[in-house]
Length: 331
Length: 254
Image 1 (spheres, rainbow over the protein chains, first blue to last red):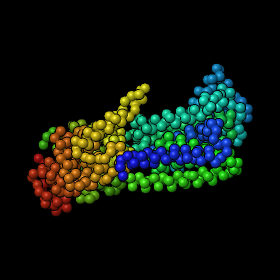
Image 2: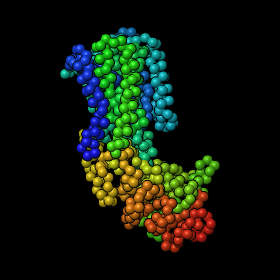
Image 3: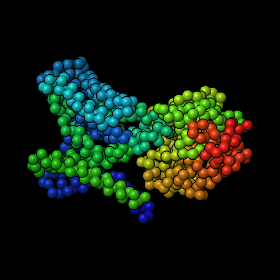
Image 4: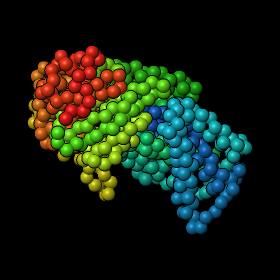
């Protein structure tokens, strides 16, 4: 095989999920009436912002060879914290700050801090106590959701302060600011992963932790940072979720974890660690969103979504194995 | 012997009730190549890990360049100038040759105050290092998982030659290499030593030890069973030290 074809093939394999996304969009546009509209495409991006942001954090930890099952509950807790403080009805306290815009940074920092703290807790236990990330974060997934129920008493907060709501309403080139925040996150974290020593080290830790330790990379420090980032990013997802729903309910975001997992796996991140890129994850998120939109437009019962997502994850894992075989042939 | 670079003084290591090292004492000079020999389970790899910061000794002390030395992590050992090539390769197969070569020591440039990987500069350095060692790898941007065992080991060897430091520990570095590559590897060791760097090489192959080492240290059941200059001993004598038939030549070399 000459180097050209080989390079082209490698390129296709590396970006397979983008090709799948384009393929799916083309097929839907042809066969589903009314699918091919700018409004629909904008809607696909808009609907994927919360899931997208959450998937970034999850992907970081998985690429580093670990796992964070707590992101969904962390997002819910952050959303509830913001909701309780800045909502004016339900269990909302309706805290007012002057000037009003001050509520934006304060609520955002609160959400990030809540997430970051739980992330630090997870990371500390995983790294220092050397327990499996799966178990630690499964526990967090449960107790953090429990905390949401406790502080809300099972009730909800509504009517988020307009100054914060503004991010969900104000549009720029057809997309609400919340969607732009998600896109910006993907750009920033993609650059961090691809271009900085920190990102490079995370990928290498995911590939061979012993080797990186022997090479003098501060593995523990990097891993804790990854968990803190995953938590903080989940907090941001919670903030976006609160804006989107203009408040918070006790069961806010239930099921997002599995969608995030699906997006990450479909996006080409290997659960074994060390493999995958964030642009791929974004494509995975968009792919899920595109399919959801198609299901809505076709008027299928929403329950089908879950079946299709499950099959999609299965397909992604099989595809990953298939890609491995091709790569081995190439080498 | 030249000025000692690293001195081990009665270093021991226990794993629970098992005494892996019962008190090891020997020294390595600047620019000296020491071959560490011993049967399987003699404690060679444990010793290397202690010097390289992967394990902490149970007791005993080490002097590095005349100063009390104890590496609590590989990072500390590296900072002191100790490079290690391990038996099981320490490469991340999921990234490319350049990333592996620079693992933990990437060249960066600041963009808006943020360190950003300078891929072009790194690729140039790796290309040069590999070329001067005569190692051929199709593309420096291929992931290491696609390379052969020999190519992988060549990367590790070139890595230590490039970074050098003050002391190099090699734990069976030639296990996956062919005849020609091994010869080149042995040349590399001499070349590194001629720059005043101390080298400790663990090997099973007597011939290699006699080809490259200035001094041969034999470890048997966790103690130094022999410490002799290469030109004052023979392979047969060393084999007897390894198996424990004789203790002739035991004790530190003059």
